[in-house]
Amino acid sequence: MKLRAIIFGATGMVGEGVLHEALHHSSVDAVLVIGRKSSKLHHPKLAELIHRDFYDYSGIESQLRGYNACFFCLGVSSIGMDEQEYTRITYNLTMRAATTLARLNPEMTFCYVSGMGTDGTERGRRMWARVKGKTENHLAALPCRAVYLFRPGFIKPIRGLRNAYTLSRILGVIYPVWKALIPGAVCTLEDLGLAMIEAACSGYSRKILENADISLIARTARESAG
Image (cartoon, rainbow, N blue to C red; front, top):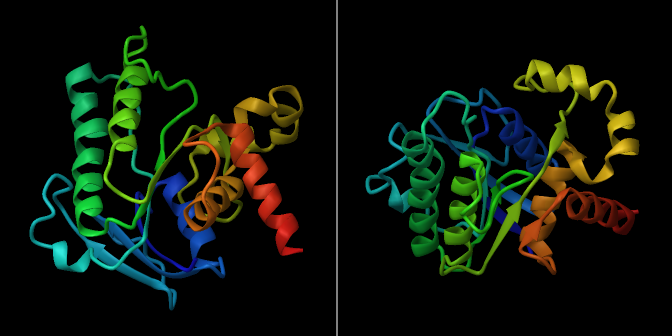
């Protein structure tokens, strides 16, 4: 399957990495980045749509049709937020975009970057994990072709990209140590981006993808490509 993908969050570390992988993947024909500011990238596959209100897409719906994948990489830290505000940004914002895209493109595959430790029961003690769990559960019920929920732990950034977090760059230096000690809790940003593309193209046996799934999909894709 050839992908026409929409990416949210391309000016953050994860979104920038997923965009990088998409632009260089032979199965991706076109990418539309939706953001409040430009990614400042130029590529034949890339189009950008500057949009200020992520809770209202009524004025741009015509520009959102004709896509069969969405890589949703927007996210914020819960530090300093109460549950109401974190829910508004994490759950409400995500669901508004997802429900709009599912209605406009029922054959779309929606890939959501959640996080390791997300609480699918929505009853745990950690506020962020409950809210992420609620978001995952409601995304899974979308009336579209498929939904995949990615739960990376520590993500090693891609060298040379602009939006990697300082701490991630520092910890990324000793990524081989993390991979050896806690392989189920880490992945690379290249692997995450490739796994999202492969899931959208070919599907996957599980709807929730942990770090081990992300690494497996990416490794299998590279082996298949030779």
